[in-house]
Image 1: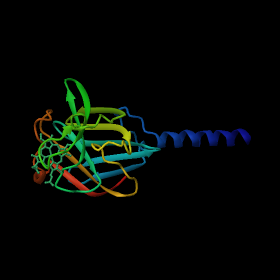
Image 2: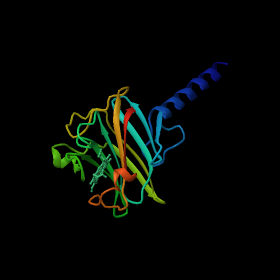
Image 3: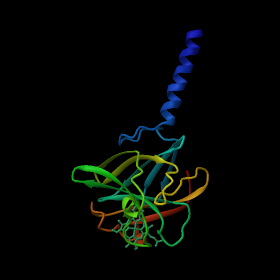
Image 4: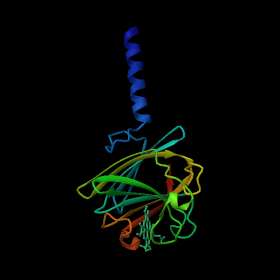
Length: 188
Ligand code: HEM
């Protein structure tokens, strides 16, 4: 009886640890993340877990070229001020760029060029059959002006964009034609 109780406790602990802490390996496992939300028009599926002071964020999104996500605490002027992340290919290697949207339209800039730093703690991505699988982690609050502080439980803005080319100098399709979306009630 004693040993059964011990085994049950051990199993429970293993299960809760694996639920709490996603593995950033480019594979989004069933139940790996605590939360999931789908943006209907694009079909983008966004999953996230908050573990201590860290956000684990994952997404699948159909895109022939690069794909990006942006976070913000509020909309000020179009996408100006968004904390942007773009997954693209550097040759054969998937990369995730930590960027900041200084302009109301056109491309964001690398955080490094806007007084910030690359705040991505871990990233794994796979682009296959015109679909991106993206997983990354970062601190909820990096303390940088180029990163929005993620406040769990408070509605925030999340944005996504998909581009026809694997070149961040080339824009996404027009936002009015499904190339970019904005959700203004996203609760981490
Ligand atoms: C994380 C990456 C990106 C996201 C999430 C994103 C998102 C958006 C959104 C939501 C809008 C519409 C804003 C509004 O009018 O309310 C927009 C507009 C625009 N974006 Fe981006 N964007 C990204 C990257 C880029 C890049 C790399 C380029 C150019 C190389 C670009 C060029 C434009 C242009 C020209 C517009 C104005 C026309 C339109 O609304 O489609 N964006 N973007």
